[in-house]
Amino acid sequence: MIGLSEDKIKFSVTKLGHQFYTLKMYSKHLCQTLNERGCPQAKSFIITYPKWLDHKFNVPFIRGMFDGDGSLAHRSNHEWKWSLVSTKQCGETIQRIILDQLDIIVNLAYISKTKNNTYELESNGNEKVLKLAKWLYQDSTPETRLDRKFERLLELEEQQNNRTFLRQDYKISNDEKLNIKNKINLGHDLNALAKEYQLHERTIRKIKGEVIVSSLYEKIATVNGQPITAKYVKTLDYDQRMSLVEPLFQHFRKQGWLNPDNSAKLKNSYKKLCDWQPDLNVSELFNNSSMATDICKYFCHKFYDATEHNQSTMKEVFHDDNKLRRLIENRLGFDWWDKEDNDETFNISFRMLVQGMRSMRLVPSISIFKPNIAKYMYLKYSQPGDTVYDYSVGWGGRMLGAASCGRKYIGVDPWTTDQVSQIVDYLKLDNVTLINSGSEHVKLVENTVDFSFSSPPYFNQEVYCKAATQAYSNGEEYFYQVYWNNTLNNIKYMLKPNKWFGVNVKNYPKMLEMAKEVFGEVVEEIKLRTVRSHLNKSAGIEKYEPIYIFKNSK
Image 1 (tube, rainbow, N blue to C red):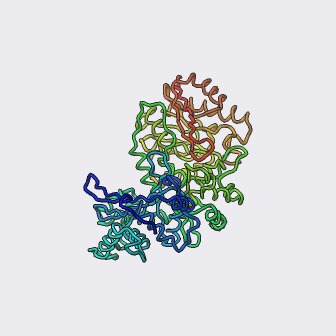
Image 2 (image 1 turned 90 degrees about the horizontal axis):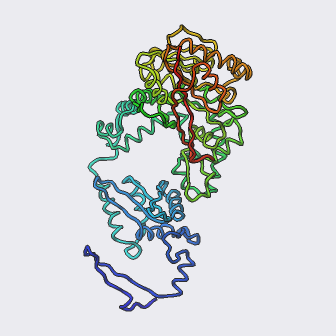
Image 3 (image 1 turned 90 degrees about the vertical axis):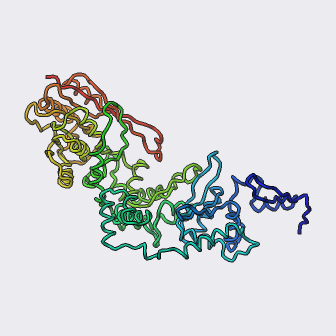
């Protein structure tokens, strides 16, 4: 027992009148022992969870940390929050212990404003917080706990025991739930729905989750009954994550290839496109928007068969065992495991696998022309009611852009019109004509088109299928001298005098030079700016693609 003299205990009063005592002890042995046990000097940013600690002491140890650096906060709306501040390394261990003992996923977030190793464990939800706090203070005594925080636990417990509603009051009828789901599908605001049905916002979000889970494409995979969510994966160490690779591989092999299957938000996506109004005074456009592209992917399954010359398609990557395992490892965060500033994890679903293929550059970035970019082009270079001509329909992005702003759309494509026509039927689009043919063969009535632009194929850079109807299938001479030459001259014939022609082409100067021979010099240029994913090797790099605009002088 260390003897305490009066000069080692100091009494103080804060500016707010709070009294406290400071105890100072001087012992070389005590300092050395603490250091050996993992509690060094200036420990705040370097402390780790003690590996020597017997597991039966986990609860009192974490309780001691919580009494010192934790909080049990009561908010004004009767909602409680449990939190504990520590280092990333220590926080991750405590996170795993809580998950193992209580089956509760506690968030771990970086909170330092001074770029130090400061993280916060956090949990919300009164029932979850109560379970966590009761676990911490089980078997504690006044000598082994901080009573001030223990009293907060008692306050929370009393509140939950004396609620004016019972748990079953959270329940709603199946008819009401169905109505809420329908309104979520239509894009109704979640907060407004909570007020309308007098439900907590969390209940509405839970119902929204049920809507998403109904989609196999977006459904989170489970292993032994555990959903493999991004939050859950963050709690796992290297070996635990690695143990998930094989069962996840077997899960996706058994499930097989999936196409997007959730149509719940498609009509709302189109409505957003119709409501969106671009600034027509700018000439540089951000090309990373996904507005309404979900419509194209839902109906155009041929998108997943497209690739670049000598590259794999998405389906081929999925059916390659080695590549599928590598893809799963990437989604579990192994590719940046040893990077302090990046612990990216994902909900493991089929949708996230497809996203990972592009992030890892396992497949080329076959793109869908952005419907909002198309809308900008039609608004800028044509008038309401004008007839616009698309000489390469592709996945339907330009068609959606034209329909969203009241243009009469004529589109030509030898491969995708069957699937794009399903979009027309689903959205009940008027004034859309699709022609199943190559643009080199289509020559409509003279002077009937008000504006024509597209993003044509670049010889054999992008390979859509091996059919002879594809211009690149007949060789380079055919591509330029028949396909592209005839397309340009057909458009010039159909396009009214002094109307606009546009082409989105990059790094294929011969196509641009041939366009100049038919239409004269470029009059305007629209730049499409794309920011590449931060997860691939080109992180942070921007790229630009031009749309060249010509005027049809006859």
